[in-house]
Structures are given as C-alpha cells and as structure tokens.
Image 1: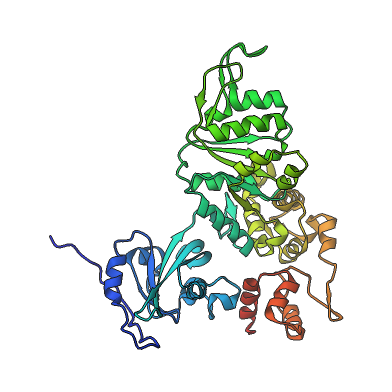
Image 2: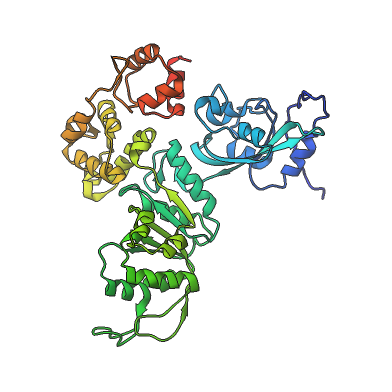
Length: 466
C-alpha cells in the first residue's frame, strides 16, 4: 500500500530582491510533514506560504483560509506587524541577528487565546539574503490566557516573560530560584514548573521554610531513625525521601537557619544525606526549586545567607512580576478568582448558585489600585466583596474604602487631568478625548496610562484611532 503524503495548499514565493531562485515550498512542506509540531513557512513580507498538517489540526479554523494571509493577522488579529503593536516580533529579530529567534506570544486559536512558544528560523539564498522563514509553534500549557478556575492565569508582557523562562528551563535539571514579592504566586509557578518537566508523574513536595525551628526542620526534612530523640518511637522518612524522583520546592528559603544551610549545601553538592540519628548514607533524586521574597544576594553580603548555597540554588533565577506590573491581567485575574470563589463552599456561593462578576465601575477601581499585597490581597478583597454582595454582581460599594479612594486620585500631565491611571476599563469617550489631546508618542502615552503598548494598540484599534 502506497504511503499517503497530504496535499498542502501553498502560496507562490515571490522573487527576492536579489533575483535569486526561491526554495521549493512543496519540498520544504513535505519535509515539515515529518515534524510532529505545528510548522509554517513565511515569506519576508509576513505572508503564510504553507503549513504542515500538525498546524492545520491545532491552529486551523474550518472555512477560514490562512494561506497568503499575514501571520500577524491570523495569529494576533492585528493589522500591523507585532513590533508595531507593542510586541516582540521574531521575524524582525531573526533578520537582525541573521539566525533563529524564539518568543512566547498570545495566539488566537480555535480554542481561544493561548500561550504559544514560537521559534523562527530564516532560510538564506545563495547570496545570504533571507528569502523565507520556517516557524515552529508549541502551545504552552503552563498557564491560561483565558479565565480559569485553576492554575496560573495571565497574558501581560511581564507575566509572559516569566512563563517563557519557566517553559525554557522546565525540561532541564537546573535548580530554579523564584524571586518576587509576597503574594505573587510562587507556589503556583513552582507547581507549573513541575508539571511541565520530565518529573511531572512523580511527587511534588512543598517545604515551608518560614517559622520552623532548626531541630524540627532537620527531622521533617531528612527524616529520623527510631530512638533518634525522645518520642521517635519508629523510623520516619523525611520530606526529602518523599520527593524521590520528583520536585522539591523550598518555599521562603531565605528563612533557613545558617546551620541548616550548611547541610542543604552538602545535600545539593553530594546528592546524599542521612536521617537524623542514622548512619546509612542515602541517595537523593529530586529537582530543586526554591523561592523567596527576600533579597538573598544582599543577605550573602552581610552573612545572613551562605554565598556558596546562593549560587547553587540560583542557577536559573526567574523574577515573578508584582501585580502593579501586570495591569493588563487584572480583568482576567478578577474573573478567574471570582470563578474560583464561586466554586468554593467557603464563599457560600455553591448554596446560593451565584456566579460572581465585577461591574464595570468596580473593575475600574480594582485596576486603578496598586495592590501591594499582590494576588493574595486581591483574592482577600474579592472574597470579602462576595460576602457583602446580595446578588452576583460586585459593585464599588462592596470594595474597601482604600481601594475606592485610590481610583479617584487624578494624574496630571501638561496641566491637564488624565484618565484614571492604569485603568484599561476607562470609558471610550474619556479615552478618545485624552488621546487626541496627548502631545507625545504612542509609547509615551502607554507609559503615562500605565498600560502596555499592546493594550493601548488594541484599545485604539477598537475606537478607530491610529
């Protein structure tokens, strides 16, 4: 029986400026058919020339052609290239670097917006001119770009940067250090890292290093033998043994006592340990992920944290952005948190059947607030609001006074009042008036409003403003 090679629709590649012969797109696509990941071929003018079957299955929409269309139109619903809409454009970077470029983007798919890891590789002609590009697309499952009842949620540039770093390091064995303020979701990031790694089917063990005594830390972490101390009536494996083959997450590692830091360092360097009161040397097999909100590097300078341990655990640091740097994510986070509250018995929503949502006015106030306590503070505020709301709609009067007051403090520029800073929920009429009067560039306008250029571009496009 003859093997079947799918017939792939292609678009003729135009002659390049150097007059060179262009590649055989049909042959290139036949090669890409052997790749299990979605892949497309682009010309230097951003047009999609061809796609393999994997791309059609994951990203194609029945009845909607994409061959011959611009990649930014299909993937992002933009009418200009990514870099002109405030995004990182891999084609522009690949051309400048004369080599591959990789970026995490939000793509519109048949399932809605999703995080997609994009790698673009240029194809060179005889005179080393770029005549086409091959793009590989991998859907990232570590986070959701839509409201979700579990896991990480976000689509802002700062959030995507952290997710991109997580996605790159997950398949490796490198220790990861999660840095960020309290309430930024370090345990959720650690869980996502574990689930994206090759150890996903093995245990994920959390060790809370804060507020634990030295003696208790050692016995809980390493385990102990029978008779090791008063009350040790039997052998007990420690958390370290529980994590065998999986991921060990040391939360708030900056709180580990110096005497225990020495033993952690030895564990990491040798991969061996002993239970408390034991003589048998045991071998450890785990992926180390640590997290802290403390300035560890500063602590190494004044002796509060061992420098050698710091460099062991920080092979791949990831900075988790505070919520004030994720303004674009606030509506998405509010929706997700309200869904989670609505499914929790503690909020009483299951008995009442409420599916909570925030009113436009309440959302504007939530967006204008700085959130020093980050997502943890937001959840507390929304849980309180759900208890105060008699119906399913969260209104401004259900929010704390300090949040309502924060939204009324006006910013000033050029002697003119601006809209409430950092609030993508601004009324269209107010935004239009402000944009028309603003004297600076689009980048300066986005910075003044506290938005990303991408968010500003989408709002202006919706209003018909260039």
